[in-house]
Length: 113
Length: 111
Image 1 (cartoon, each protein chain N blue to C red):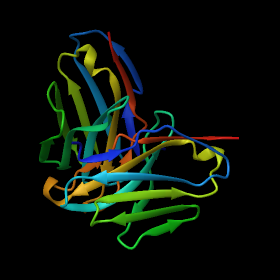
Image 2 (image 1 turned 30 degrees about the vertical axis):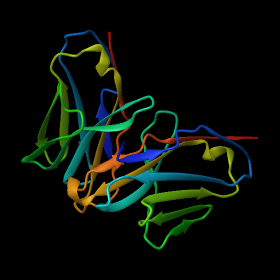
Image 3 (image 1 turned 135 degrees about the horizontal axis):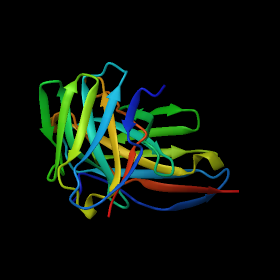
Image 4 (image 1 turned 60 degrees about the vertical axis):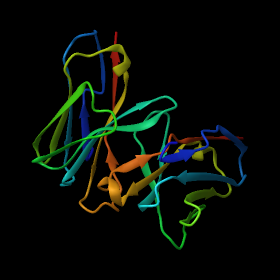
C-alpha cells in the first residue's frame, strides 16, 4: 500500500462545482502539503500544515481551502471550480525538521470544463 | 526573479554521455537542498540530498556552491532509464522550511 494516498486519481467536472481532493498518509508525519503542477511552472505550494492545528497559505491559495482532519488526513477543496484550476495536484508529507525531504502521493488529475 | 531557477531543457543526450544540470537560488537564507526526479507527470521522488561538501550516489554527483548560490547534478554514463525531469529543491530558513521547487530540467537519453 502507498504511504501517501490521494483520492480521486482523476476527476473531470464542470465550472462552478465544489470539489474535494483527499490525502491520507501512513508515514506518521506531522507536516502535510498540497501542490499543483502546471506545464512550465513547476510545483507551486497551495497550502501546508505543520500539525493538526496549524494551517498556512502557500504561494497560490486563492480559490482553495483545506482541512486537516487528523494527523493522517489533509483535504483540499475548490469551493467553486474554474477552468484555470485544471492541473495535476499533489499531496506530500514530511517529518518534522525542515531538512527532511517530502514524500508525494501519486497525484490527482483534475479537469474543469 | 524566481527563487529557484533551472534551465528547462530539454537535454537530449546519447546513452553513456555525461550530463550536468545547474540550479540557482536567490535567497541567501538557504537551509537544505535536494534533487528530485519526476517521470512523465508522475509524483516527484527524492533522488538525493545535497550536502555542503558535495556527495555522490553511484553515477550521480551533487555539488553545492553557497557563495555563488547554485547547486549542480552530474549524471555519468547516462542510461535510457535516466530520462525524466529533474527538480531542484531548496528550503529557506526565513520561509518556515517550505520546499521551493525549480521548474525542472527535462532529460532525454537516446540509444
